Length: 353
Image (cartoon, rainbow, N blue to C red; front, side):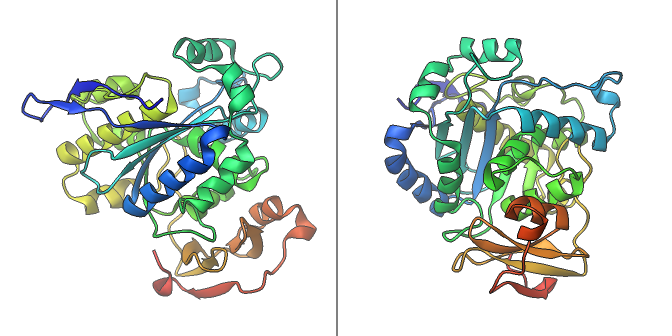
């Protein structure tokens, strides 16, 4: 059932604001929810995302996480994402950068079973305590491969039905994007952090904002999502913490409050934080030329930086110019990377963003 209820929202003049609807997505109602998600995607170019997964099982043997280099952090991220399964994805939609969320979806996936799959016991116990029903996920969850197709059909990532480029908002997004990229390519993450960043940009565009990274420019903000939201005077208006739908709503509300208080001029925010994932190095600047990607024959084009040597591979029905390692990964090996028909290359100025 969708979450409901009311919560006091700072800045609302003391009035009670209705909680945003969090729609639960399972295998048995997926067709109905896909229509609702596609409708939301058509109205709302802003999406906040959160994921739930079974913790981390790989850590660095000698270094504290804070002392790791970006490359070492990505190496651990890859090891954990490759070894574990995604449990839940939350997507919150908003019409403008400053508007409240219109609707949220909590997609419950199957594929993880704590009885047989590796996990961090404390993390799984916490998720269970917060209401995640692993037996229901096992019996009624959405197949991850079907959800990947659902993202394309809803127009959220490049594909045949891709809509206009959108803005994505996250909190400490490395693992969120790690699991989403793994889901979308159907394989383990690339060995190179640069290739991973390239895939994030290819699927999610340049307007990606990590609230955790934005905090580095906001004096006095620290800690996790709940603490940061509290410091900003933002309350959770629906659901419970450590549930992906509710956390994606709180992430969006924290982001728009940070925009109001710390970044009233979007140009400043974009110049400093667009495309920067907390804990990982910023994506390389766009090259003088870029390759456009043909998104499945009708979905438009997305810009991807020119890299040499570049290859064209098929990802999700479209032709993509990607780094060689990513091309091999996405198309089934070195021999599978091929020049697909209909791929287009154009100056960066001509790319549609």
